[in-house]
Image (cartoon, rainbow, N blue to C red; front, side, top):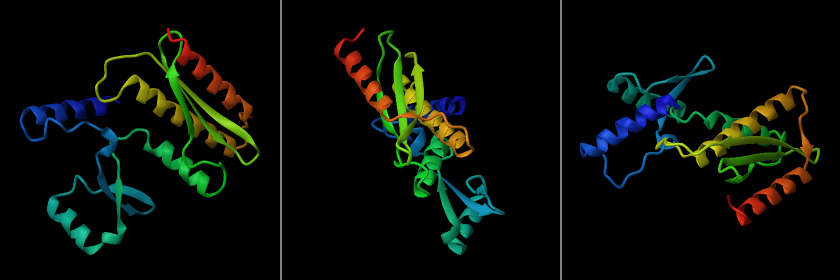
Length: 183
């Protein structure tokens, strides 16, 4: 997140200098990079000289992989999608419930249903703070997805922390209650 903060600062400076339109918004996940697979690993090519990047794009376009180098959460989302493709969970995107709890914290519950009719749950609770690149709401959402992805990894290793699917409905009721009676 520190790196995202510094990229945000550079973005603001570029806006102030007129290089980026004032109406554009900063989105760390929208920054795209390029990589190529070498011996089973991704190697970023963004830092190569432009002439080498262009040569790779011309000579090996089918091998170029677009990345999101400044999104610290993308790997968790990608893992969930891969698990969905092999039928380890029923959704490619977790069920996400968010709201402010009675103490004013942003809270998110992310859930993945399993073929066994149970669910894995990731929770995150974040106090409101001033960090322009990411809001407390967005951070609670992303951290809950990271946590449910970690629950999925552990589940696949044999550690079962799943809960009855009915627990998701209980969380929905809590969020509805908090919405009706805000702090």
